[in-house]
Image 1 (cartoon, rainbow, N blue to C red):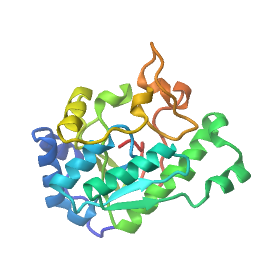
Image 2 (image 1 turned 90 degrees about the vertical axis):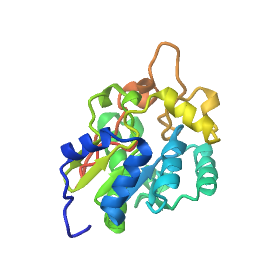
Image 3 (image 1 turned 30 degrees about the vertical axis):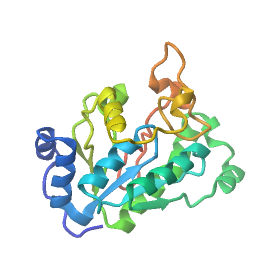
Amino acid sequence: MPEAPVSLDSETLSGELARLKAGERLKLLHRRYGKRLVASTSFGLQAGVMLKLIADHAPEIPVVFIDTGYHFPETYQYAEELTKLLGTDLRVYQPTHSAARMEALFGKLWEQGREGADKYGVLTKIEPMDRALRELGADVWLSGVRRSQSSTRVERPFAEQQKKTLKVYPILDWADAQVSVYMHDHGLPPHPLASQGYVTMGDWHSTRPAVDGLDAEATRFNGEKYECGLHLESENTDFQI
């Protein structure tokens, strides 16, 4: 981790970012924090937006992909396509337990209620991301979370301190329509599963296509658990990008 702490409080930074456009936000953040910055992606349905913005405005920022071992095959293929298209400086991190080892030791954790889902999140998402932050020397983490994606995000600020990590959301205020227009205007390919009714994207065992009458939150973990909601040393709270 960098020796110097983040110098600007999150509330002040949030107000500063709110007055800028997404590309300007990335330029300001890179100018201010430099190598202390890292972004993350899960190569979900709208991952191309943040990756394109980074490629155009701050291509030096490394992008972390947490490979849980349970992504859809189409997600791995999409990751290859976008990375080559945009020249992303991609850093892949994996759990210390392989999928086979984890299931042999603990069973299918995602089928074991809240406790199992929490343990699954620690093993496959939280620990690898914490390790990435430490190894890359980053204490400012950029995420593509948007307020319109979930009812739990409507009051989220552009920046929030999570213990040692300052988490920042450059496209927090983008509506779904703005995302769609941006992807169309920049010729960004859609996720292969977007045409099959998926409105969010996660691991294959816990993500399903949308059903009439249910919102996006109901497509993950049977509607019982949408965000990771876990923390270790860096107190990270979700892994959407």
